[in-house]
Image (spheres, rainbow, N blue to C red):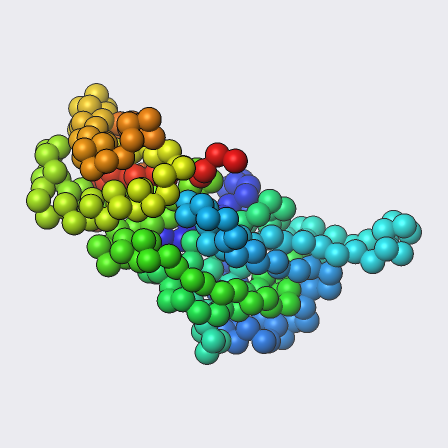
Length: 294
């Protein structure tokens, strides 16, 4: 469930070189103590990792920030060199204690200066075990060479409430809105229906328990369909499904003032609608736990 970060969209003529640059980053050596492809580390570039300090469980467990440190004399003389100018592709790489790359966040062109959220999941979307990890930034420069910033240490400690979601095969994603808990159609509804199946009740009960543990957070339930059929029917079905999940949470003791629901139809697909597997992933209900208001 780890989404690629693309802070800009390249034109068609630049797409292939950017994808090639990302490919080279994926091949970067797994051992975090060594620079990629023998290239020395990029001077002045640092990757900072901030672990979640707030009690807000909708906040991401780790936030990365990419910084450049310029020498004072270079700033005054105007000779400070921007190491990230002309970057073709970048990747934040996370390694376990054995030096294996277990997760990454990547994007094209210059990396963002804003904080980058990491949901503590593997490259395959599975939650990573608690413990210590190493992380580093790697990037492909304008000259085609791969450079890396020094590694930094990250520790993970997953709250018990969130571990229940993994046991129920619920997908969890951190976004700018907050924490998204995704329930696939097959787990909760019959095809084309909007009645909650009994087999979905344990997962919904765990979601309700989690929402009770973070009473300061508002919640939006969003229903989604695939792109098959008419737009009007898809919007109506997605709204009915979001409404019945909202009603279940209300009946489970979640305050009405915290809850809202929307029918999104085929909007915001998470996979291609060209395949049955992709369409199945797109037919879902998302429980979005919004970040607590400060």
